[in-house]
Image: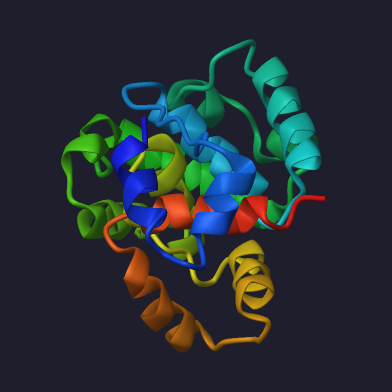
Length: 196
């Protein structure tokens, strides 16, 4: 899927060895799937390990009796959401997302048709969704090729490992321009480089 990106990045002396070591990029965009449910998952996953986030997400789906929809979320009490294991801030965020989708303030099905910056703007308007969550959505749900999440801890660690020195976010962004228009794919390799 990312053949052009990999061919382009193989010319970069920093990323090329990672491509050779880890093979093809495994990001598969979830285009035209349930963006609402995906965003609820992204909110739950903020600052949690994947395993913990998955447990909370499954508890929530169980309470909602299957697929998550704005109507089902709004029908649950705040305490019911909290009992799934999430913090109050995430409860408020998920409720705000559900209200915005229900009230058509956020046209969730149209996000795939918007440019990256407009998707960011739409999502960041939701309580509790910041730049990082919006970037993860762009990368993993919409499969956008040129996102560089410089605030991500894994990216910071990956860059430090790659260059043997710590960079400020500003210097990382500047350095990553060499990977444009495939910074999402380069980021995936940085994350992979941290795996044992």
